[in-house]
Image (cartoon, rainbow, N blue to C red):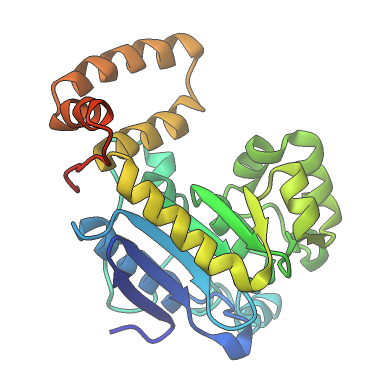
Length: 280
């Protein structure tokens, strides 16, 4: 079905792998469409609890395909393949994500924040240009010690694309965000972990086993329904007041008391066993 990604489900994890290794998985409109379609597929699959996004070969994603950038620089407009047109790029159509989320969390790449299931970026190598805002829209980022990061935009005469001015500043703070965006310098994995750009760094050969172990632990011990609600809370409350977040959490807490997962969570704790939550 897919030409530029690989898709695999191994209960309880769906893996979406960018698959243009000779081009360091450079992003295209077709790739964008295929990733979105695969995300929707994983979101609807009851077997899947956690989604992992990674790259084939030695890189995560080198940013937009250079042919598309060259067309733009020569005044040819938003050519397909640039990764910037916002079009699907082929016949694949998908509309993943929680419809209860605000429209700003359902944009071209911000839709990742509205996916009901946790999305983990396993950054196995260079992550550059528009790969940065895409990875920042994932819920968690784990990186290889060989990973490198650069926004690159300032060095191409571009601007802070795809909402990265919002996501990056909230992750690392405005001072670090200014540094990374204005200088477009390269950041190694150790610095990325220190400033909060990634959650954790692993030796290269241990990255994917560690990511899958984390995902399986999450899928085994955490309620999928609870995670879906909490993911929405975290993102939407970033744009709301503390009072609104508190009131909303009280309402959602009362609703959680009526779900089977609450009873199962309490019983499993008292019986000293792993919980058996329904999947969504």
